[in-house]
Amino acid sequence: MPTTSRKTAAKKSIAKSSVAKKSVARRSAGKKAATKKSESKRAPNALGRLRQICLALPEAHEVEAWGEPTFRVRNKLFAMHSSAGTHHGRGRPGVWIASTHVSQDMILRARPDRYFSPPYVGPSGWIGAWLDKNPLWGEITELLRDAYRLKAPKKLADSIED
Image (cartoon, rainbow, N blue to C red; front, side):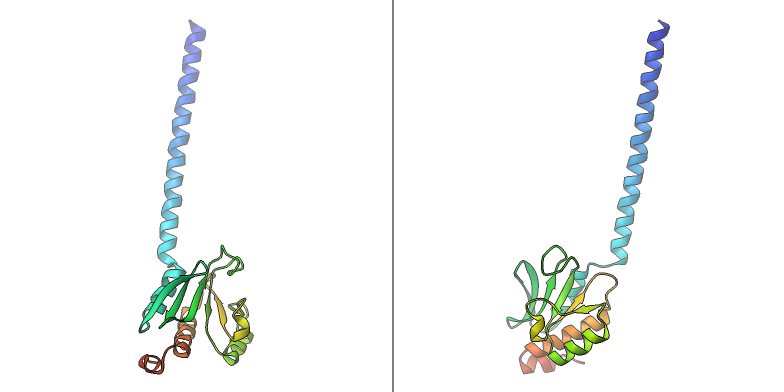
């Protein structure tokens, strides 16, 4: 009998430690989830912010093309999101913004760490802006408004304030 009671005591001890480990695992998983929620409150979704800026412009609309959201005015493309998971994003999320060659040259020289010449449309003067690592939303908003003005009909372009 003494060996049976030892075995039973050993099983109970193992069961208690297993329950304790599961409880600790649940608590740490809860902390990780809470941390992710608080991080998402601090850093808004870049695509959501991009949508908010673009779709606030008169008659701007979103169309999915090439597997990415694009922003247009009267079906003329003025901005395109590039996600990190596609070959468009080079491993980082960004936005491609219509521009002129002069503006592109000045911006790329001034801030090569934040802006780039995007593939396909870069030779036409478009500007790419990285959306990770704390983007400068004020500058990006101005670039998007300028792009809208380039592509929108004159009456619509004149309707937005500087």
